[in-house]
Length: 145
Image (cartoon, rainbow, N blue to C red; front, side, top):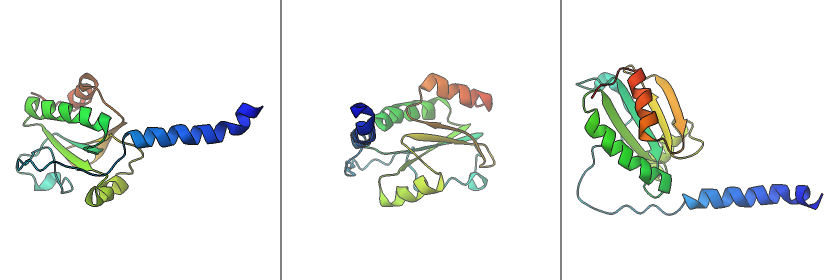
């Protein structure tokens, strides 16, 4: 019985440790190189010259370990699908990025939101998303290399 009475406290500690593993102060190195993956604007497919079939919105942080792993996947996808896929990254641990976390209803990071060519969400995933599984979502929308 003692275990169950202390369970809420244990669960709270485990949750705090899990959150702090991806937590921390925002520290971005100044490289001088602007990434095409990072964007500070809300994706507006109608305003795009070459309308992509899918806009992949990654909501995470540059300091989160699973988010760093997703960065490698985003870079790979950007090279594989330059015409049919647009990738947008929002660092939700910044003041500016926090608004996107709220507008997309992010509950945990990383979160991937997939928008069709009309800007309508058709798929969402939370957590690390292996490249092979992510590509299956893209193939479902006829995204081609």
